[in-house]
Image (cartoon, rainbow, N blue to C red; front, side):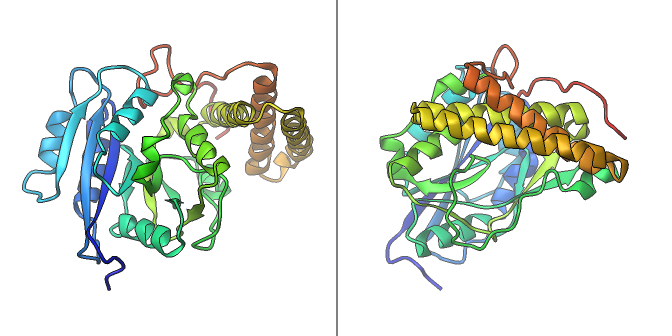
Length: 321
């Protein structure tokens, strides 16, 4: 059933950096997208942040014989913000822009569900769940649900989104860009969409618009998970402070950090019942540390010294398994 009265052009932007096998899987999932509305045309853009253009061969192989309008461009300037802004600049003439990551596989009607939700809800931005696919993970980590997003009703308003599963109105790219100050820490996408929400844009959830993210073994180690939790809290707090310098924001963030630390300490003894309880307590403590570091003016570096796209810093520590 048609939902539009005119042609709609959606550009799916996929950023990559030296991950050929994962990129190939992502591209194949996009090639196989099912869009029930004939008025909707999906375009595909791959932005390679490797100056050598190493992703070109994968792009050609994965889309050989495809009729989808697709382009490959290389963004030689290092940094995730540069790559994302290149994607925006390459999306002129589009009605909507979508992003997902090169370690994800889109479910067959992912894009259509995002568009349906945004269109029916009269929203500006729509996002959906990212479900983990574990390459190799301790059973207690999987059972603990540390990587799973909670279910929400489609159409529910949300506060912020990331670029690993999102669709938004292309006209927004005329006035908003990704902030390069977050190149070494991540969070440029959080900052981007928080600014949009602050300026009155509507962000909504689409439960059916699911993507599957590959979670390698090293990302299920305790050290990596704690480092990631600290980094996420740090950059979220930095975003909050950048958009609202008031004392009330600092008090609110410190209060949440304090409550989180107390809850984490209270949870640790429950580790005698199950390791997942101790892990949850440690995660709360890590988030509290990341928040306090941001309040103190410190950044938690998530990307390596040369902040190339999709090159997370090495994990530390060993698994509790």
